[in-house]
Length: 436
Image (cartoon, rainbow, N blue to C red; front, side, top):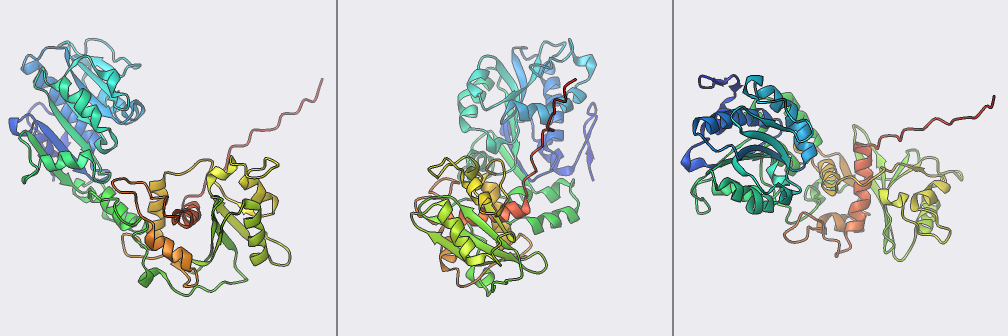
């Protein structure tokens, strides 16, 4: 049950939100870090934090040159997620004049300024002092935005800061969380907490369970349980021989689905067919060293055509193939495939590598333990790649030096394309000049 705020506050906060709010403006918690799962209510909390910061600035007679900021990774994000909410949160009677819609700032009768800022160009923000700062989605902001710009600006007025967001691996957001916890990494003046999406009370249990079916276990822990997940180790960590490798014989009666990576050495394709109850199985693999798209297409035709037709074959390729020209005639990879008669499903641009891998891992084993993707034992090179592809040390980027990435990418294009099909391009109507 939500607790009422002190006299003068207008909103109700949930118990977790109240805990974060209550620790504000204490010497021992000058810098607070709130690690929260999705839909926790972070922006609602932020608006109440800023309302209180205004009253604190007036009460303590803080010089107006010390501003109050809400910062997001980009200005566009800040404006979209917070500007309208901020305008509803600040009463008109507090304002000296109408809000500046271009700069997304408000000037108060006290002379203080509230503004929202994008932190991608943090060097351009230097100048004024700061009394209070809220950093939203802090894991996506560069550490230098804090150390080189925000932190020095808080010094004049002894300002406070609140960092809120969902984890994104082991980065500076995790470091600030550890600074606020008891233990060897604790620093004076820092306080932190961690709440899951369920603890936030804004998401029904049924929705959380549905997310568990759609997401792999690490992605679910990160997004809904606010867990700091390392990207060290295997890229397809959800894949296992014990659970995902089983006989999946080719059926001449079913459509053929192909994931394809256009790297020339080797050209790689994984062949799949769908099963019952939303399952899918890899039935074959094609790996062709020092080859090209024409040769790969011919090999697929040779293996899988039926009665001289390839109409039953759909290829999910690397989206870059729409621009990459690999033939002397200047044809693109995707145009070559279409010219052979294949159906081709390709996005207009690359999905984020992280998103593609999350979908792939979720098929091999979702957060609720369900498995929908299987690999026939004869696909030995694919199994080896799924087991051995790793991240580069200290990064969240797959290591491309091993050569295992081509098979992993090919499969990822297919599984992601099936789960998140690209939107059809809008067609511009043909205009006919009929004369007079």
